[in-house]
Length: 603
Ligand SMILES: [Zn+2]
Ligand SMILES: [Zn+2]
Image (cartoon, rainbow, N blue to C red; front, side, top):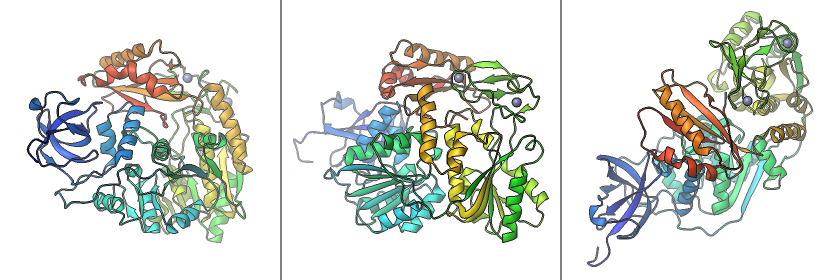
């Protein structure tokens, strides 16, 4: 550094639940840029920090003499450009979380040794127009492959899980960026430097800089895996939408039965719906009533017949079974006790003999008989995959029956038994038949998205089955609108009904939800912290703050309580002020609060 040139101060953020940055002195001779990672001491410990700003001393940074110095640089160039940092800032603000934790979830692990100098991502690419398309027709996967392989622009495919990412990386001969990739850091740089045109990853790759013109694709956009717990606490779809708003580019959302949110966006003209050519044929969807049957056996006569026919032809069958819904249902009439205010199934708390609403906290004693038909068969039914495998193997001893998350793991099985994810990983049209063991297990999830999940499962089942094949749906609700729409292949009909329900009861996309979840070794402290949060939000116009309710399964020694907040589109901004002091105060031993914006999983 030439004599007289000013010493520099860098602001760093760390992978900690702290919503602020820390200033450090930049040692002479060190060239730093925002987006670069460095090692620096914080509270006596050497940690990885990301540079978010660099400037001359004496700026906003305060007294430079008292500042600690950055110890060393972890990589010679920033991994993200200004646009990536802006997206991360938006995501942190929108989810009321730490910028450092948000960035840490998005950047590949740093290399062990500092490598040779590399070129940084382009400073500010010329702005491209932004477009969003919702691809839901048959053959959309092949169309995406053709589109990206044909080039010439850069492309990034985001898959719901590592296995799908791996398969797509092979399909496109693309750089692989999910957690199972051999060297994410090298793959990331290969794309940044333009040595690889296409990349595939999971949501940890969302920030990968791409030269324009770029195409971003989200596979199975409706999948809850695109919003797992933890930072960054936003749905991959919303992050990608924001990304194309900020830097332009083309966003392709792929799903046979899209999320209600995406369908609504398309209906409002904010995304172009691409339904493609109609499939040449379509599997028949048959409803099989289960009255009195599922207590004893997972197979109705129509499903038994479908299995027998398919096995005789040498075809393959998939059976979809779910873990038991935490709600009660009547085995005679199909009635499910629901929350009078929220319309969702009430969760059964066996030890307390109560029914509770996971959304609003409403509780009532568990009835001894069915409230509709007075029958005594009110129970928590459910056939997990293992029980189904055993029952089918007994009924068809000559068949090879396997429980599988992935068909590749059971290549010789005649009957595959698994959850919804199994169907999604099968090639389209490859099955002779699909059996949905208990659609009602999905319909009675204590979640306002229960009908959407059921419709998506049915649509996926039809797509996985050959055109002349059969999808047998075991249910006590053969007239349910999700099933009717699947039988007639009428997407619009389902979304019209579902959107009416969402609007009436104030659910997304009409209102926005946020779950405040507290946990702690001391239940009293956790409850007080949640009460502090609720008190802080009292009186904020436009918000509905519900009473505390138990928050699903947590570790046994750390009971969790949650409270739901409903509000308008600008919900994060309304919460940030009042909740800020509670989020930023030092973590007390007793309890912590987590903010889950736009939650997707209530079960
Ligand atoms: Zn009943
Ligand atoms: Zn309720």
